[in-house]
Figure 1 (cartoon, rainbow, N blue to C red):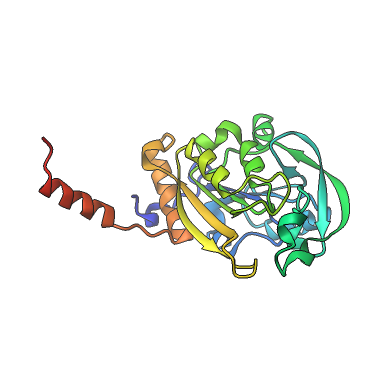
Figure 2 (spheres, rainbow, N blue to C red):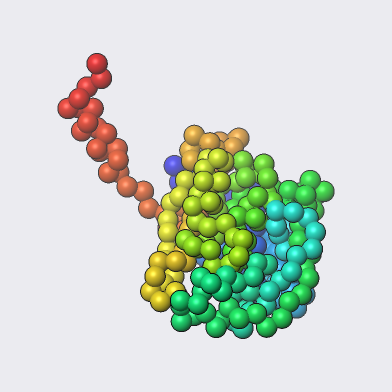
Length: 257
């Protein structure tokens, strides 16, 4: 793995393109600290929140704020606004599943409105957005659909962070297993899982982190390795030598042939 200290070139090619889907409130501090070493592309369908984001990101070279949602299809979607903003989604809450948890009232829908959604690869093909290096998704149940909308651009992507559920908290959502299986097709390895424990202490909701496997790095590999080293550092992704040690023991005790 490349030394993250080598990542000092702020040219457009070396800058990490961070696509933040559901970016209300601004960039995470861990990314904001990198300054011009990243190029943020933020998606936020709420006009007021989008305006605030433009102010927050004004100091980042090449930053974009796009006032729409992302999805697997171009077109209009219904946004279900819930009592707690952080539970709002383009999928209706799954009342049958939620009723067993104390948190259920937070998912009560208070109003609905129509928002414009796009596939990311549609925007990229039109020259409106750059190809992603890192994708961060916080869209309450629509994570798989957002990923589907990146299409083949996931081939060149290096890291993905998203919030997901083990069970369908929203009607029609893709869950953790669906996401792992889909990203495996593009050479992504699951690297870390952080539980939330907001559902009566059950392990239902997680922040999960994926990075591209070394045998599936996009070209040029040297640049991808430099960026991947930064991603590992930002997300504090540890590496264990246990597997290599076990393989070495096995090869000594059971040599080939």
